[in-house]
Image 1 (tube, rainbow, N blue to C red):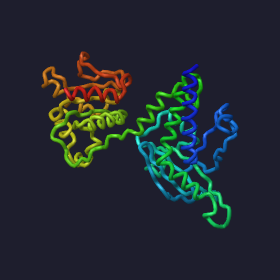
Image 2: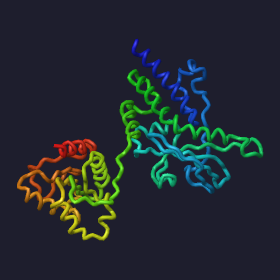
Image 3: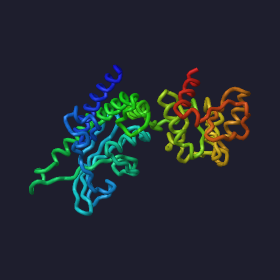
Image 4: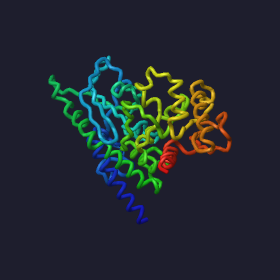
Length: 348
C-alpha cells in the first residue's frame, strides 16, 4: 500500500507537469476519471482543442511555412494553410530525428491527437505527424484573433513538447504496475521510454565520399530487400571508427568505374572481413553472385582463416559455403546486436 501511495503521488505529479507543458504547446490531455476532483476540474470536462476539417493536413489551396524549430528528439514545422473551402489555420508538423516511430509511440501520438501522414512535403516526403489550429478572427484585424496564441504554442514546442511527452511516459510507468494505465498500450512503459530515448540519440552521419579507402575493415554484400539492414550495420561500424564498404556511401567514386573489376578487388583483396546477408534474393541475383564468388575466392586463399561472416536473413544456405561456418540470425538477434558483435570482433 505504501508503494502504491508513493507511485500514485509521483504519477499524479508527473501527469500534472506533462499536462501543463503539453498545454503550453496547444495539446490538451483528456482528464483521467477520478482525478478531476484533485485536479480541480471535472474528470472528463477539460477543455480540448476541437478537431477541424483540414483533410489530410497537407492538401490545401494555399500553404506557406512560417516557422521551424527542433529539439533533441524532433523537428517541427509551422505552416499557414487555406483549404479549398476557405478554412484557414496552422498545421504543426512533427518528425522524429531518428525515425521511424515505434508502434507504441505512434499510439502515444494518436493519444495526443496527432495524425500520421505518409509523405510530408515539409520533410522531403517522409512520414510525419501533424496537428491543426483553426484561425479565429474577432474583428476585421488579422491580429485581433488567436494568431498570437497559435504562434506561442508552436514556439513552446522546442522547449516543452519532448519534456511533456517524457513526463507523460514516466507517469504511465509509475502507475502501470498497479493496473492503472494512462496510455492505451498494454505493458508498454519500459519499451516506450526506451523508444523515446532512441529518438534523442544522435544518429551516425553518412560519410562524405571525398576519399575512397584503399582497404576496408568490412565489405558488406547484400541483395536489395536487405539494404535497410546493410545500411544500418554500415552506419554502426562507421560510428565506431571502422572503414566499411557499403555502396551507398561512395556514389561519386563508383560512378564510371568498371564495377565488375572494382567489386572483385574489394570482396577478394581489399577487405579484412566480408559480411554477407544470406537470403533467397541474394542467392538468385547476378551481382550478388559475382560478389559471393569474389569473397569465396579470398576465403579459399585464406586457408581456413575467418573471412566470410554470414548473416542469415532467411532460412537458406549460401551456395559454396561450408555448413560448418558459424552464422548469426538477423531475425533472432536484430541488426543492432549484430553490429555490436561485429564491432567487438573487429577490436580484437
